[in-house]
Image (cartoon, chains in turn brown, cyan):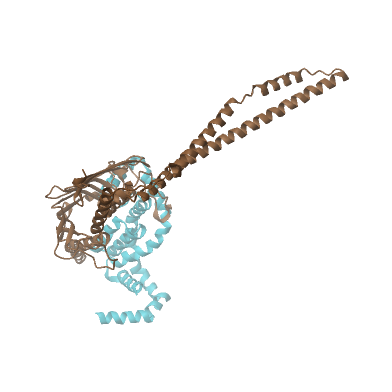
Length: 442
Length: 173
């Protein structure tokens, strides 16, 4: 035994363990703060990080995610979080988190220092103020117009594009009916019976002497004439069928243009009456404000990203390696397979009943065999989602409820349920408002 | 300079002051390192053994470098042997155990070249050790004075680099 070597190795091992024990938490803390801040766009801070090796766990204390819009406010704060890691997958260079538990989740808490990240950015407008102003303008406009006697300028229904389109479609349909009747009334029997007779006569041709030649020639001429007539009949029938086909296409096109014309007429009539728009999209933006619409669109964006990055079940083809120098990996039956990344269970809760929950989030759900489930709730919103990638066809379900959100002095509710099966989407969005109109209106 | 130092230490070990078992031991462990792919778990064990066992480190490094080059020629054989062993039905339970045991799986014995090279190294272990020891004894008795007379030895010894290296070594002492 070479004791010098043994002691050197022991010292090296001890230094590595000590180094990882003292340095790892700092490195992890700094990485989380730097990456988090860069990704989120506002400060992400941690008070303390602890790493324990038996059981393998990472403990975060005092996680604060600053708001991107309010300088001295945290978007979210968590008192403490523990990540329990499974060791066997780590040896396969896979990160499988058995459990994430957290407590002291709070939203919108105050912070002493600025949460903004210094950067060159465009002058930010107060979005909330803008939409309040917009809503107020819209309500004032509606009130004002309702109080006035609305003078509707005279106009004839004949001038409406939609009416013209409807009339044109009706005319096209009538023409189509005439064409259909004409095809229906076409009688092929005279043509076919003439051919049958001519063929029968032609069969009887029996030339025995010179005298028989002239009657035979007449019968052949008759047959040729009958064939020509039949050809003309067929050509005529084809022409009628083609006209009928183009008539159908024309009716379909005219019917498609009716809705567009209706929208155009609606706009011109509203312009004539000088009333604010009551189209669904415009109302949504006016009533909820651009902030809510913007947030909703952002939420839909996150949803789309989540759907995109939870991969569908596909059989990956293994790259065939050249056997020389690198050899070949022979696969054996695995008693337990681990996905490259997994969060088995995560629950972070707050004192006010708010929580964020994740279950079975994996980068290879077909290995894990369970659909990913996410849920979050706060005082006025709740979201439940499941992303099933265990089968060949992805199936996702998202249920979102946003209750009692303030719209100026009124309150609103938004309910969304969307089910995605493969490429099919079945969704339902319901929003309702209470106290939108002034009391004296009702 | 590394080669020069290594050669000097190896010649020193071969010449007198190290026991033949230590030189042969170092040489055999170096064969393991050289024949199998560098980043393997068993190589970590071999390096630890080289450090803590009383074997000649220069001999281990020298044989690792030599067999690292020779190993490429053995790769085809390693692959064939590894594949035959991994595909062998009676041994399936053993490989499956290795494959499913977390730490042992890191040894990558399910790779044909890794397993084949380890088996070849194990086969070569005893003959290499025995013949290595015999070679050291033979070298000291019959070959050393012949090597010293060899032109290449003289060139190396009389080269400016070698002289400079020896001077530096003296200062170091």
